[in-house]
Image (cartoon, rainbow, N blue to C red; front, side, top):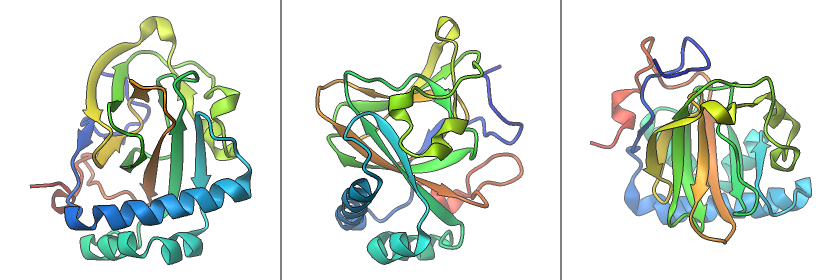
Length: 205
């Protein structure tokens, strides 16, 4: 059985979301604006980092198209934080679990071509991500895999939006030397049923 961090963690790895594809460029533009603005405020370097933004009013005012989509999908009230995940090829993220939530909606922003989210089975260590990856203190709750036990079990293309399981061991993988940035949006309560299934209308048909 694949390792899952919590009893509530779903069995599935990823799903394509039912976002309106015609609105994706506007959504990405707004998220990129938020990323640049908050990057300046947090003074986090442009390297492999995870930075959580919890200023809900700022996010709602900046990402108006995304918020309209969330209202259409019935998850506007569930949305609560955005984590910007930057990956520099020389500083990899080890496979890890996010701990705080089970799922996320990931949206590519910069240089996500030829990059992937990869999942693993394995045993976790009582250790968080490397210091360089901790852009905001909340990221310290993550737990990484014992590298001797990691076995790949699946992957998806990070250049298109996906709902992803963040409490099965996973990491971003890049195949180029450019800085890659994605937005990872979190929800509470999470839009899953008691068996861990994503609400059906949130999955691309």
